Amino acid sequence: MNSHVVSAQAWERMVTAVEKVRDRLRRACRALEQAGIPYAVAGGNAVAAWVSEVDEAAVRNTQDVDILLRRADLERAKAAMAPAGFVYRHSSGIDMFLDGPNAKARDAVHIVFAGEKVRKEYATPAPDVDESKPTPTCMVLNLDALVRMKLTSFRDKDRTHIRDFIAVGLVDGSWVSRLPAELGSRLQELLDNPEG
Image (cartoon, one colour):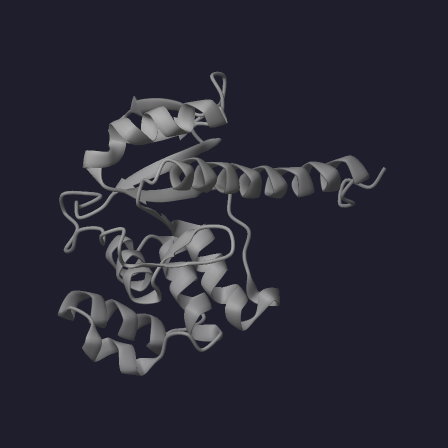
């Protein structure tokens, strides 16, 4: 067998992995909504939601599920998420809901606390959950808030997500002056070098 050929089993595992992430996201959103807990989807799933409004073919899959919550709602969120199969865990400074008692950290809903800096060295805190909009399945961060988060983190995947926004026309040079100076200069860097 040619080692450069993807087997049918590998293909099925890839499709299943994508479906598991989407299911995890849907169950988490449903649990929070049923409990009346304000939240917003952040990270790669929020990026995918925005990109899909312009060009479905440009959407990237992600293994991460990131939810923005207010710290004051954490105890209520724990109670709401448990019946949906999620187990709260705080590990290595990260708050998350594991997707079952034996799940790994990558199989979790990661919590970002609204109004707090994800890292102390970050220039700006995470937005509040009210900077969001409803979609048919969940609340998703507004584009402005999501762009600020991505430019604040500015890791490789964050830069890729901003480039995706640029490629589909959601973000352009007019955004530079709307952002805090540090974030505006980061955006300009990506606009000047769209291929990375």
